Amino acid sequence: MRSAVTRRRDQRRLRPRAYPVVMVAQSCLAPSRSIDAPLDGGVDKYERLFPGLPSIVEDEEHLQALAGPGSIHDAGDSRPSAVHVAAGWPFFGQLIAHDITADRSPLAHRATGERTENFRSPRADLECIYGDGPIGHPFLYRRDDPAKLLVGLNDAGEPADLPRNPEGIALIGDPRNDTHVFVAQLHMAMLHLHNCVVGHLRRKGVPEAAIFEEARRAVSWLYQWVIVHDYLPRLVGAELVEEIEAEGPRHYSPGRSPRIPLEFADAAFRYGHSQVREDFELNSRSGPLRLFPDLLGFRPIPAERAIEWERLFDIPGRPPAQRAKLIDGTLVPSLIALPQAITGETELEAYRSLAGRDLQRGHAYGLPSGQSVARAMGETPIDPVDTILAASGWRGETPLWVYVLSEARLMGGGERLGPVGGRIVAEVLIGIIDADPTSYRSLEPDWTPPLPARGERFQLSDMLVPAFG
Image: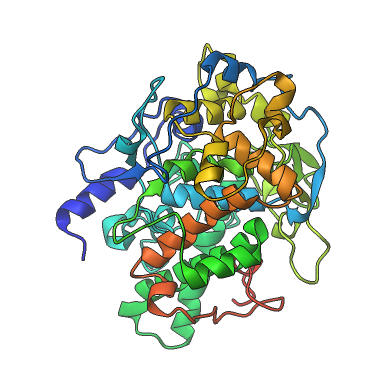
């Protein structure tokens, strides 16, 4: 059981606060992330996956010049779309990232990444959905039925928004899950799924005292199973997933108290920034809408912006969803020129670009080059002249984030990650699930979802649109 000190610490850590939009947005993207710092110690730290590798030697000003409008990372108005990857998958990756990582430290030109605090437990347990449960965080739950999570009403009176206070601030365990419509509605879908499972368990006659914990366990296991059996095979290939499941990780050693590697958090798992589309159709009435500013979050979501999930994820028996963009090292204009509501006031043009922020984080934490990581992993490195940086005149080894994107373009056809990025992502995600003593892989490794599926087996779409009431 958690101690009283841990519960109080976590309550401070997860309590939603009515921050201005810019301040909440900065916790996701800005170089300085000092908001909502804990009042005591005890939070997790990050680690190095390859602590013996030297930092890449790079010119920060040159890096910044690579990232803004008109740069090599700017895709302009048109980019090729993926064939196999639906448009919603990078946002599910964002939900996972928010579940297992939260770096709120101010960044210097050279920061000590291993001392940086991770304000999330390194477990795939939907901590940002559940907080510390109906006793520790009652504001996340219904007063009249605390086994169920609180869901908000939209302007049409439908239970289709996050719960919000009178100023429109979401009452959720992590304010980053209200950054834009997609992650907000993924969060809301998890609320609905939990409440559906509660109703399902009651109809089965599960004792009321056990309902909440049983529902939380079921939803967490579904989420973990989908990560291993649906999300990762699409991203890195089924063969690599099966190898790691059977043999364990080669490079990541989570141990009994796992930490998230910086090579994962600040490079490989930022692959999804290159997958995001510029515009989306949310439903049959919306027409095309830009990610920013049209779908900016931190405000109530009207009924006209409700997402029909079959437009973002492929659902058996329905037309194909919109497609994600290829992982190729470029980003759409909405991410190259972020709105001020996201960035806040900044004098550096590069910090208005998500590519600039990704490059700056790797530089600030002194991550090794992609080529040195490839060599450490026993992979043949990509020649720097074959990466996206070559067109800019860059002659040194490649920043790890750019290397992962270039590798996906060259070796994964832009549809999936290559051997370096794919193994880092898969080893960390499977590793933390295996290290969690409450996960399905620890307690019942042969467990499969007991809920109905629309296709041959259970998928994320069956969580978002449950095939039961």
